[in-house]
Length: 186
Image: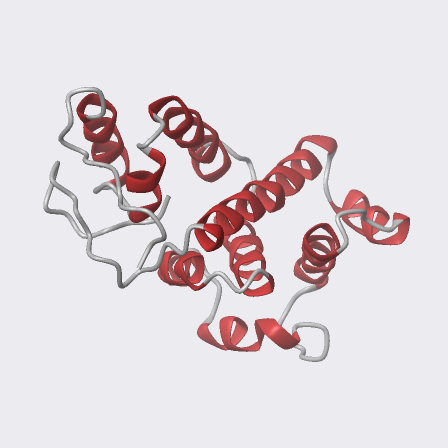
């Protein structure tokens, strides 16, 4: 159970944004139910994550591979629960998801995926990215995609740290009063 109660999505000051979130995401996920304690933060978060997930030039499979690896490295099960079905829809295989913890030793990932996974690991574990790791990504992608890869890793580190600090979990009671839709990813 989350460390603080989820916000009331039906409260007058919150309802319009909760309705927008439900319209864009299918429901008000636990993440947004918590963020709605601060509507300006919830709105900024929604705009940023919408850009990362829907306005990026990166292939969806690469984006979701990054997200799944960050979730794994940060031990963020809610994040993994939300994004595993999306990763599969975007073309990541179940075998790749199962082998992600040992991606360096298995032969299931392409050279591009391996370069991005090394970059994701460096950003998440060390913060500073070694020159060789950066050079491998920069050799494969133009500057806009390098920025998008970097922003995706950074964004989902932010997400997982928020989720884990407040102990937001998939099995928490879902109080989506705006729509009865099943939760979807952020």
